Length: 403
Ligand code: PMP
Image 1 (spheres, rainbow, N blue to C red):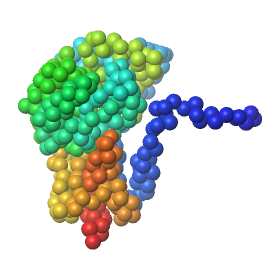
Image 2: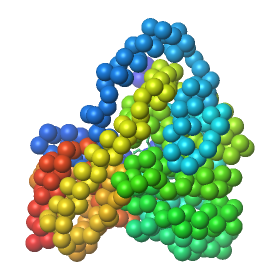
Image 3: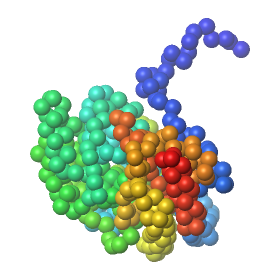
């Protein structure tokens, strides 16, 4: 043993030393108790996947072409998977050449690559209020200056965006990036309306801001096809990230990014320097699945399942929490709830957990301390009867706190 004579922890980078420990870890551990109904994690309900088929695909691939699926591959990803991704995004009105697809380890890696390719410390990024907690982490790691822009039931508000851009211009710091989750937003559950898509792109174009469209929930709409993706409306101005996590399964760790060529080539170099190449095995299984299975039908089954779960939650909220307000998602996984009387969702969380329900307090989705009286309810994982029970317990905890 060589006892350290120095404080080696002082070697940590500023970014690593500055990462605030999240209370979410503890919350998710507590939510594993089988008594607790967890409305905390956005975990897809995978029970209905064709397991036999996936197992057969993996077995056949290993026996037929083992060496090639287990070899290093190109940083851009396998050609067969890039062709599959082109089919998936075509459902969103995006016509792409498979050569323009960059495969990533989930869309989380795509967000990280885009942030690293564009942001220097102190650069300004606009995000929705609230926004995806995982994007906040990526942006914090680049030491970006994060500014929130209000959203409502129709998504990001163009008037608030214009105001933020004007304010930034006056201060001499035009944002580099606008990050948005345009369909069934995480955590708010809202979708950016079509006329707003045009207004947002118009503003971004005028101010020279790149738009990062993070769209993993696009195909999970409960009443019809998705709206045109922002990238389909303005390919020069928009970087688009997508994922198989919500429409197939997150364990494949497969996502993608579509970007203007000047950026795509840089993203590929950064990806190569980070992971060399995405997992060949999961790419090959997913590519074969997309090419040989009626995956549209599978996604339809997911939609039916999540629609039923959303209805259970909304119906029970009406009865149990009439004093609260909440969004009515048209797809995806999440309801965003505002507590009555300015109740603090972080303070309420331990009492809710004791009553047997877990959620994520709203402040997790803000970089600026916002969202204290708000919370996210993820209805994707528990079956409907458990969701009803979970919302009842939440109602009990809220009533007790108001007394
Ligand atoms: N973006 C959003 C909006 C998400 O909700 C998630 C997953 N919760 C991700 C990106 C990352 O997903 P993955 O890396 O599994 O594709």
